Image 1 (tube, rainbow, N blue to C red):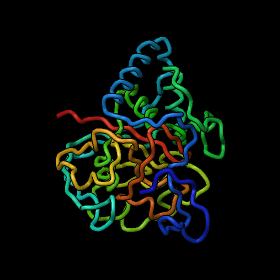
Image 2: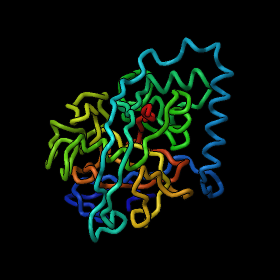
Image 3: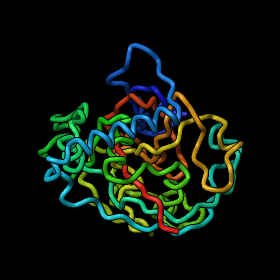
Length: 290
């Protein structure tokens, strides 16, 4: 598990996982004085507060996103998650998912700025820092420097939610069975932004089989699940949603600073829900009508 780490230094390999030029999400920027353990009840309370704030800001409706990212309908199906003898990735287990909608692109700076203007929500921590392509000067780049709570609040405002960890992995595979990456068994720098110098605009690289962009590289992404080392051993088969509570939340996909092997479809990391990172953003999901 990669959590709470600084950007790995040294060449040719990271001392923690052996990957060349690896980056481990988890660099804290703002921490409360007191440890916080999140529960689903506290999440619901925060979402309700965000919705009420949005309703109180209807006079600023003109600031709503001019173009919400298009969503792709991900068909219902089964997914084999995990692998044998691999720590928190074990054991391998099959899950079955209902159909759902997923943003084809990561949430952008422009979209997140519209949310902040409409609700009074604080701007991302790295806003205005060009090295992280964060700010109004980079409208089509993925937003970074947001906490899990920020991502949940944005999703509620947009009438959506974060994807579950299982939904994210199923969608990232793009219909491929057993492939290591979203587009096949290998990943090149012509296919994804990894080991780079900063985030790229969303949708720059070719999509996977479900027309989803940047499911590998660019920025890693918050998902809805709380994290537990042993969750794969007790995961329900039908539409798993993660543990009921936890001190960490799951992050999926590899960021622009990470190595190729951290951008595969099975790797999972974890961050505290109030931490921010310059290589972590998010995308939103929505239930499909039954």
